[in-house]
Image (cartoon, rainbow, N blue to C red; front, side, top):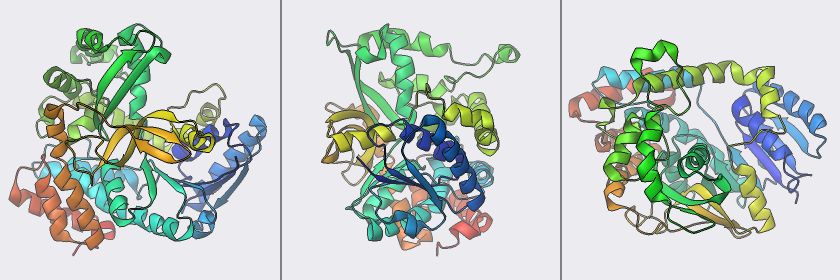
Length: 441
């Protein structure tokens, strides 16, 4: 069924080319219009050139155009996908990470939670609300999928400003389960039934069973997980003899598992952003290695011809779920999706209903409806509830352009433990990032 799919932020090769490649593989969506949009005209042209080249190789019927005019791009859109960052991405990210540390804030990674997550949110939410303003006016019935971080706070702000918008946050972190669960359970992934949830980047595996026998598989995970994941911890004495594996960053991860008896979905760099005690046990080396490599990849590798061939390798297995969701709606599949970020409607009892949660969902022609996670553990939920005030106050700060609310959001954050230093930090960040935070009064 023909759709008009608008990719906002398509100048990013990592997002734009992977999304186009995934869409090209869909027979259900063939014949659709794909509109590439970005404010960076040079990068946008590069993305379209690669997309055109591989469209011929794939021999598919899609109409691919590119435009820097957002309002024109959105006319008639049925699907809008947002993946943007405020430039210079890594320069600002480094400030988010390092400046709070100068004020004694023991934060980790600084992308989604902690003080760094606040400043990232205060920069990126305003342009996303501007995009949503255009969507609300031009194509209000479109499904809007967000890949931008900080996911929790972006989705909450949009839900407050545009409560009727079909806005869904997507994160591929859940894909880690496809690698780990078969190893832990000695069976193919196709034979595993599981549900997970919480808040984006701090969620846990709730239920897991074998499809063929319906036997509870969690006892085996609890028996094997510590040994399995400890193989990913870096031995500093042998550091020159081994490289950081994709499964590293398991310091906080393992302590959470040992303490709460539920398997986390993500790794230290994300989990640690929300926990005041995380800095003392995090796998800092692996986090820094991941950040260094991610930075290099974004700035150079993702635009290389080698990566173009990787993205458009027809045998490549994508971690993203965007196309599956679009197809499930078009075909009324009544498909269960493992993780979407949507407004809580009693899906997790302990979390207020105005907060966006990450939960499994049923997807059909009616849209995307979350699945209630029964018996969500109170002990782990207590960590999630600690984020509620910071999320709400971040939204208030952006919508009301309030410096006072931004300061209160800092004070509500579990990572922040010093009133005076928090006040100095906010003033410093507004000075350093005046172009982006100067609206706070």
